[in-house]
Length: 344
Image 1 (tube, helix red, strand yellow):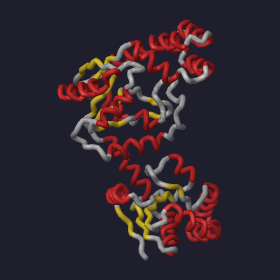
Image 2 (image 1 turned 45 degrees about the vertical axis):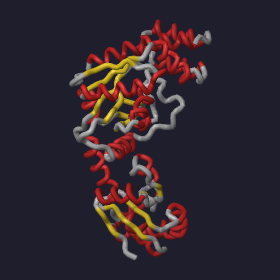
Image 3 (image 1 turned 120 degrees about the vertical axis):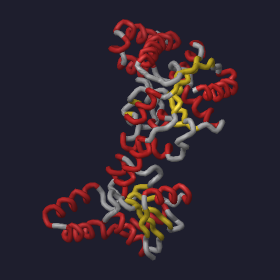
């Protein structure tokens, strides 16, 4: 049974439509740095073997490197087949490596011998990365959702999605809520490369002409950086600001962060002491020490509200509008936002 090699466009279309198991034949470190979303790691070579074979290739040439490769991985072939059978019990798989070369072809040959039908990506993961950059570089019709800390903008995005609106939840993709406290309760963040992969993967399912709601963000979300092409569009796109009462915002933050130990909150508060001002930070820490969480929240909101106002002054949004939003009548609020979209 022969494998087939297809273009990146056909590869992605087939994967998204058929959901065949997708195998990444690169090393674990390459996979962890970034991979096609949903791909399972089945490395032909581990990091150490890859290093050894690379050295042999440089010193003795391709033929010697190939022989060394079979020496190192040949005894593991049966384990590769067993693992592939677990991941793809119907024996129909898609495979890629870095350039669509030796590693993916050897794995394809091995699995074909075991009765698998294999589809390979022409140009490998390197071609996919070009596709990723192309996706997030495109000019799109973003609507920036603005609002002060604690407004619940991320939750609003998902309510908009339930109404059929297109959204990109950057904080959800980043596993971080954007502030100094944003990593609390979240899964570990992706490496930057994989963060970009996820953004483009979602963007590829959106219409480039219809509006896409995206939250107003600073350049960095935790350790991840918003791709410059998207960040510049956020700075200049039309913006809808939601106005949520201070009382509601305070209560939402209490519910979200009041569950964490005071020591953790003190540590995170001290991380922003320089920007917040030593005296203000000292007061905030004292509130935590005294167990007065509400006063701590109010103190932190003073800082974040000033930061929000300052960041807004640096933006160049084409059009701006505001909506009064009450979480007690969230359905009404979401409808108001959708209706206001027509003015932007």
